[in-house]
Length: 497
Ligand code: ADP
Image (tube, rainbow, N blue to C red):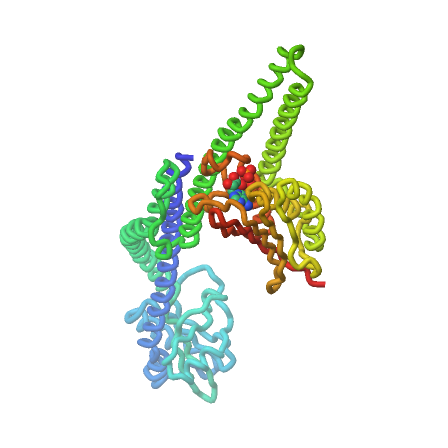
């Protein structure tokens, strides 16, 4: 993991470098080719423009005094021999051709002695265009010595003895081209090497700076991630919105927050569990000790005990077994709810009917304590959408508590009221009430160890009620005044027909 992290930046740097080098080579080669191509064009265009009138001069100077044709119609070779010498003296790079009016080569004056079989004719189109533009534009024409190739030229029309045609002068002869190419080649080799080295030098400097700059944020992020990994839970990427990889920076910060939150939650759940186990062991120990004591007494004194005493001891044993099984059941129920193993099965049901049933069920217990247990608005049928058995369990716990903490001749009232889209369920008693400082903790009793408050129970009843409320996405609130009584209120969604 650590090595992977360490390798992250250099790998990226390597890739960036590779991209830079490829870019330099690509740019360098393109630069050389493009420059070479245009330099050559420029060179050719200059030569053509400078020598645009060469063909005209040939006509004016050579044809002024003598005809290029002899009387028998054949070409005047001495005239062209002369021409060749003149040309050679002035410019070795040219070749002169005498064309007829369809482009057939009648005669040529060429210095090159290559083995290529010369062409017999050339295309007239570029020649006509050249003459039309008065030699001002860059045009290439057929090279008779190298059929298929195009060369710059100069051309001029002639009309002698009613014969029409053109003097066609190739300006960059094969020899010229050869010299020019080898010169250009060597210049461009130098230029290419020089330009590439220079580009590489500057790109290396710019590349180093940019890579350093580009990976600055990445290094910061890697550093923060490593700090977090090494246990610094406060480590966060500062100003994530300024980061080049904003989404990553935000995600990391959010992930770190979630991890820290979960750790806190796990810590508090763990603490709660420890407290629960400690309290439960304490709660289990008392009835078990009582049970053990009475069973031992029954065993040792079974012959001396009167029947009434035996019955009394057995009743005490029975009550403690009840207590134990009650506690174990509650614990089992609570741990299932806490572990989120319970999924509410919501359905429409009449909370009024359920309340009637519960009142009837608990009336026996209430009557024993001479407590009046009643349902307000018993006629109105309120339907809710919830898990019937979970709601029943919650109401049972609340009613049990109300009866438990209300003095004889007291009053416990369950009321149902339709408020907006909800049914408000209110269980009020005029019993002992809850001390103000205990009220915030009654729903998670095992968090707050208050032994005096647990005299009459195990502190799991309301914790179970709260979990049931959580499963229904609702909350339960308590309003209580010591010695005056308590009201527990919660809402359930009303079911519309
Ligand atoms: P227990 O088993 O102790 O009754 P509960 O979770 O049901 O556990 O209740 C937690 C505590 O809240 C009780 O110990 C008691 O102090 C207080 N309490 C709950 N209901 C009432 C009530 N109706 N009147 C007064 N105190 C109550």
